[in-house]
Length: 175
Ligand code: 6OG
Image (cartoon, rainbow, N blue to C red):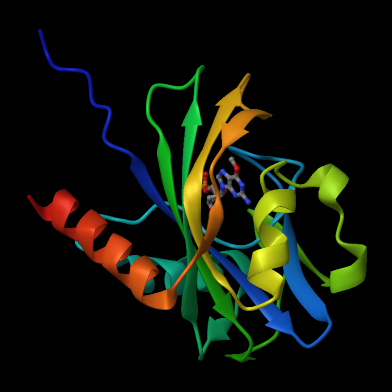
């Protein structure tokens, strides 16, 4: 019998923040359709996580970020899906091009004081305050029925701790 694959799906998530405004996209299809979210998706074979973050932003919003930084590492565990998700969260403030609607996403600028949390993944309310105040963060969120949070341990971490966690995950994937 083939062993069950429980390695996490490695994903990216990038939000562009300019002063008081955040660029989000309304997901038009697939996992999380109907939710407003940053831009991202699966890391392809042979691609670094950083490269994937830029590619997904390009594919989903038609823009090129020029100053991305890593901000968070989130693991999502679901009781109704076979594999957890490892989401690498990025921040950018500068980009070239103009956001356009794509097959996947409808982009729109939101005021940071007026984010549509009722139409976003429920974990966002936990980590956006850290993200928007330029902190680094990490942790695991456990879901039941895909979207209900059962428990979480997301917390602020030092930049060096985040970098070390990322190095460990990279090494685990390559082994
Ligand atoms: P595709 O299926 O389009 O990638 N994602 C989440 N984002 C937030 N904010 N919260 C979650 O809570 C999420 N679960 C997944 C990762 C899906 C995109 O959705 C993000 C990817 O950017 C559970 O390839």
